[in-house]
Image (cartoon, rainbow, N blue to C red):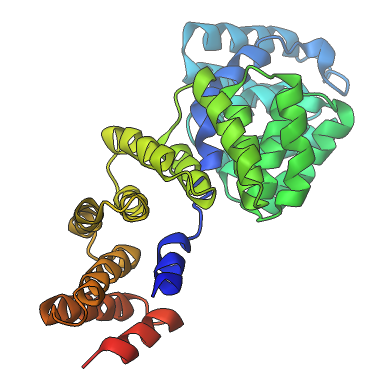
Length: 345
């Protein structure tokens, strides 16, 4: 019996979607705003159209932007683009405003145009990649980031974002060198270390992952998804007390079915069976369709039946009910099917 309970309580896959959240659009948007103000007409490609006072328009655009009048700033940038379609800095300025507004489609179009006009412009390539990533066009984002890094190989954010993109594509081997380089470039960055930890988790290098998560925790406040991944890594290393401590921290921040279900696993492994059952029940209370929690509860109940040497029939019946409920939600679970077949009546 120990063999299947061990499988049951250690087999849940890690959740990695949250790496992208280490440094979201707001952080990048702030950085973009500060960088874009240093862009000047001198950095633009092409020749000014005859009679067009493009420089004055760009100065007005940046002035409006500095004042927070984004509508007028955008209008000036668009007017420059219409007057001189080879003015890279205007495409970048308009792209920044669109991206900061959450209009990633328009932002992508403007950054793409900037990159086409001036292929060796790092900002154009990088922010084109970022807008593509925000649109979930990850494969295209990878190509844009690679072009940006060909121009500026040691840019911290480009390396970090490229690692995240590769991880989104489930290509952790490709992600690893860029995640490592971003940490080497900025060892005091919590998001970079958490990103590297996620890559290590995907590669099954749990000791290295936990080390990076711990260092990230010293540098920044970890978000819920990262704490969940850290707990999973600790679980794979059978460090269940630390796993439970991490999950307790997570549950104080943001209770979720996944967090309660992982806590149930940790409590089971620590032989705190009543607490394990309560954690699984809490997960189900939050989301009755979260089938791993039904599996965990069913395993606990089935063990109660087995420990009673077959006398606690009520526990067996409850276990089969829990496992059947799990199968109703997700039928493709061969081992759960086998348990129901073996102990069902």
